[in-house]
Length: 250
Image (cartoon, one colour):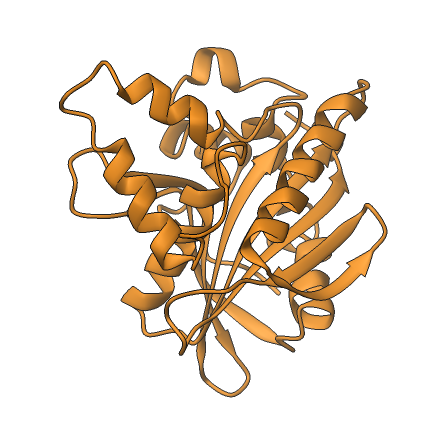
């Protein structure tokens, strides 16, 4: 099934020109997440389409069933709060429609060897010398949204909070009743086992601190859990999936 990517993106070159990473000169390379993630969306026969592994995870493992991607936006920005500078950059935002007609939101963070940002403790420490920083207030709001006020979050990764909260904010914006924040781990040709293991543990620690309810687990390759969320009308899911890099045609 073809996918509509906003901005008439129909090739890797279009993606590079119209939705590049912040630093295209250093981040747009083979074996780096920005380019490897983009390559996954182009198929010689099917055209622009959601990667099969992602579709199968959503339909069968998360339990959404068949769905249609109405539009997709790479490098999509979501306001996290009303504070200045409070936004989340998603590697991909998917606006989907289930067979029932209900809207379903998916936001994706792609990784190769990159970490999931600094820890909460590191972020708070960095804000101590900046009187204008709103990071402490932002963290408090994110903890409240995810029902983690009583949890020790100091060692948890900041990007998991912004990614999950950014996904929830999009779901609330469109009155969706379900949403998925997916961390997509792309396995390159080089050895990044240490980095992959570190990111996977960071996600596991986050889910444990939240008290999330496991939906499914397929060893270390993929899993998903339903998070505790202050919005009781929303089913908020955090998923993890590993996928092999696609051979370069560019």
